[in-house]
Amino acid sequence: MGATVLVVEDEPQIQELVAVNLEHVGHQVLRASSAEEAEAAIRAALPDVLVLDWMLPGESGLSLARRLRADARTRDLPILMLTARAMEQDKISGLEAGADDYLTKPFSPKELAARIKAVLSGARRSSRTTRSRSRDCASIRRRAA
Ligand code: CA
Image (cartoon, rainbow, N blue to C red):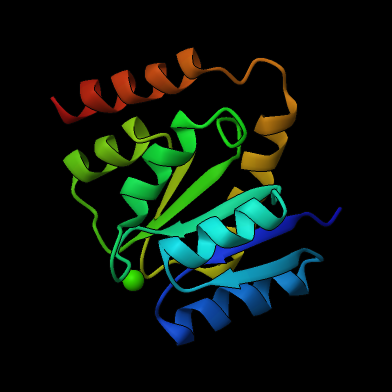
């Protein structure tokens, strides 16, 4: 089942890799290269899921995720963050900013597609709440301790 995925990535090769692979598994892919472009695309039409790079020129993906979570229209938009950062503290920051999942570069396109599927099915369950996200953060903190 195809979904509309907005891919926010400033590196053209990674953007292309992600877009081509998601199109291959049946999704409709929209692309943005900055937080500003992503916001314009989201204003025009709400996607089903956001694939958001952390390091973007100008406003970071992390900051955009926080703002999307603060807005009633985009509060429940599933967000999968992409990043070269693999430190435990960065994962916690990403999840606390409102990301539903997290993928560290380099990642396999198959894993990305599988995680998008999981994030989408999570969004369809009514049990998806802020509380379950906080629980995820708490369990990562326990593992990090
Ligand atoms: Ca980047």
